Each structure stands twice: as C-alpha cells, then as structure tokens.
Length: 355
Image (tube, rainbow, N blue to C red; front, side, top):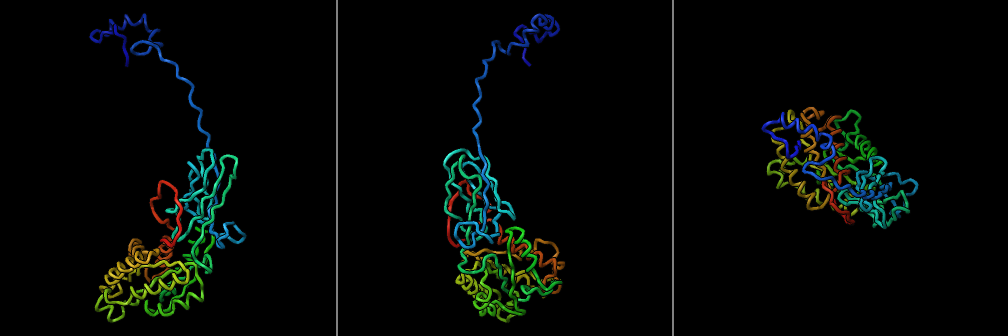
C-alpha cells in the first residue's frame, strides 16, 4: 500500500485525521507523485490464415488424388510458413492455422512420417489469395507390388493356431490398419512347424504369389527345437542368417520388411530356459533390424508389457485371442508410428529406404 510523505506510521490515528483532507486527491495521484503518461495506441494484430491439407497415399505416384486412392496417412505434421497442423486418422486431413501472408511452401516433417513413406517436393502457395485446400501425396517404394497389402510370413503362430476363429492376428490387424489409414488388407502365410531356414527357402515364391506392399516377418519360435540351436545357444543357431536372407529377398521384391522379435512362450507350460533363449535371440534380431535398416516390431516386449503371460496363451506356444490382439497391436505400432518421436524444429524433405 502507498502512503503520502506526511503519514506518520508511529501515530497512525493522528495521521489519518490529516489524511481526510487529501483523501480525494489520493484517488487521482500516483504513489511517489506525478501523473501517468497516457499509453500510445497499441499495434494492430498480425492477420493469420488457415489452409486445409489432405495427406494421402499416392498409389500410382502421379502426384494427384485419383479415384480409388482411398488410403490416408495420419499423424503427419504439415508446415506452411508459420502455421502447423497434424493429419487426422482416417481422413488424413490437417487444419493448418496461424499462417501469415506471403509466398510460402507446403512442407511435411519427415520425422513424423510412418516408416518407409516418402514425401513430395515442396509445393508453393500464396497466402492469402491462393488455394485454401491443398493435397499432399506420399509414396512408398514398392515397385509394382499391391498397395495396401500386408503379408504375414511365419509358422503356425502366423497361421493363427490357438485363436477361436483360426485367423490369428490377421483380421485384428486389418481392422486397426483400416481405421488408421482408411484402407488395408492383411493376408498371412504360415506353415506349422516351419523353422526360419525352411521359410527362407520359399520366401521368393511366396512373394511372387502375393506381391505385398509390406511383409511382416515373425520366425524363430521353432528354431529352438533344433538340437544345435538348443544345446549351443543362439550364437550357433541359423536363425539370424535365415532372417537376413529373408529380409534381402523381401527388399529385392520391393516389398517393405517389418521384422518382429519372437514372442515368449507360456512359462507355466513350456520348458524352463526357453524364454531365456528367446531373449538372447531377440537381442540379435534387434541388431539385425538395425543392420538392415528395417522397421522392428518388438512383439516380445508387447507381450511382457500386457500383464500375465499365461493369460495370453491357448497352450504352451500359441496365443489365444487376447494374445493375438497383443500381436496385432504390436504390428500396428511398428507400421504406423512416426520415424522419430521428437520431430525436428524445421521441416525438411528426404527420400530413400529408411525405417
């Protein structure tokens, strides 16, 4: 609180009497004397504008949104000058707000793109006065393979043994991908009892039969049964070389590989030490994914994070419906997540075969 210089704090009542005569003046005089200088006129706000951007999968690579190209790409950060927006699931629409006027470019942050998607060249736009809606085509390096087709490659787990509908994760994953990208078809090719080496022998034929955009690779569960692998450990096992061969074949076919860690087995029913063997092999699978620069789906970690392992299995090895839902979510995360959890502060463009 402010007081005039005549106020005596030692005798406040006496001082208050003297203050009565100047009470009215205190309402208009600032503390310390003098009057305020009137503020000048405020600066008018800088006008900003909005643009709607649709981020879509350009299946034929012509840069246009054609009839039948229904797949959208959500989670992509769109930048126009000072404005930013993020494309929504299902629609791929981003509302870019806070744009200041000028001759600008439409850009995307490559770190926000899902694995393997490639951005277009920068698109010029005049704000205001230009288009209020823009379309951003993204492409995938899949050659002549079928867009939106995801092929699961594996053994009886990929086939769906243990699930009530015998479909395993197939339809569960298809529903997740379809709701996110607006279009997806999942097929699986799993042979009961196959090792990774046996699958490597038929990979090219399988790819030729399906021509998938993505190939989801889950193998190694049955490798544990090989005597050399079991007795001498993962370092002496053929798994990594077989997976390296499969990944190479998938790349050569212009399909996009997603490599999974081996899911655990039911600890209540499986032999002791089997999950430890898988943990060791999974560390090598993760290193292979880095070496080959392919996307990793850590399904083993998804199972362990889901709670009680026995509750996720129909028997010692095969998941039940709840377990296959965990698998579907693990595949979905790997396919849909952004390349980097932390986007760059500035947009940039890039091309190439990158996870």
